[in-house]
Amino acid sequence: MAKEKPLIKLALPNDYRFRGLIDGEVGIEGYDLDINHHIASPGERHYRFAQGEFDVGEFSTATFLRTKEKGRRFLALPVFHDRGPRQRNIFYCEGRLNHPSELKGKMIGCFRYGATAVVWMRGFLLDEYSLRTTEMGWYVSGREVYIGQDLPVKVERLEPPTPFGQEKPHLAKLLSEGIIHAALVAGDVGYLGIFGGGSLPKVMGEFPGVKPLLEDADEIVRYTRKTRIYPIIHTIAMKEEIAEKYPDLPAKLIGAFREAKRLGVKYMSPAQVRGYEKEKAVLEEDPYAYVLGETEKRTIQALNRYQIEQGLMKKELPLESLFVHEAFA
Image 1 (spheres, helix red, strand yellow):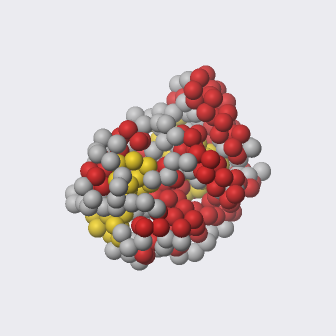
Image 2 (cartoon, one colour; image 1 turned 135 degrees about the horizontal axis):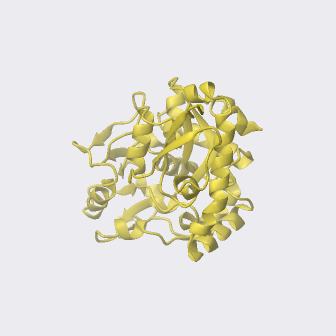
Image 3 (cartoon, helix red, strand yellow; image 1 turned 45 degrees about the horizontal axis):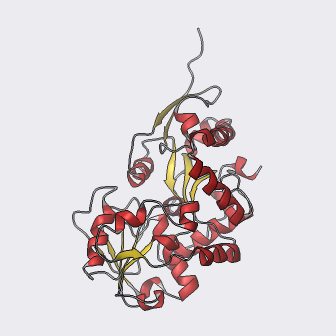
């Protein structure tokens, strides 16, 4: 009688880079996979992974760092599938703001205070415009995935919070009405984050006057090349106990994700393929090679630094404590 294979439960977005795994074209030798790709909201997917529902799953990178600082037993794989500049995700109402520096002392809305995209946007405002997190007021429309400690700023929250995936229209309405002065929201990663387009401006623009504050593609390219930081929004993490129980699994997972990514091109539209090539040209490397290279190390360290400034973390964590050993091979 054949030995029963261990069953690994995964939570993944229904994204072309994962379709090979989701459709069963890519498997993992010696393991059966139970892949949930039906959770529409990334926030809900991350929340359920943080609650221990899955062995392996997509996870907010900023949340992952916070859980590690608090001793939660997760490890990251070098699978950085959701990346890109966040400048275009800062929205304002036309006629009410002329320059990002005017946000000092103002009320800023966000869908989650601890969301990775929001952490990146606050970090950008700090580095480029010297806007400290404590110098602005904060309003949150959605449910947090995980914070882990008291914050150094007062945060107003919508009660009850909007359901996962429905946070943006509420913020756009408040922005249009002048109740908040800017909104930091997620969406449109990768080449769309550099060159524009995508769905986010349309979603936020349903309310009069609401538009991105920073839209200069040349300036976004300049900033990316100057800093050599390319924001990682979501990564793939796994339970540390699973890595210990099945020591061959991390390497096999990395290999499977790389193979699924290689096959993903057949699920991409011509526009996505062209955008991907433009994105690689900006960076002069493939941001989706699924390796822990110098750009990735610098990016993770910047995210850690920003979270300390924003009161979400207290210390810098060594990279060796964050990733499976195979990430350094």
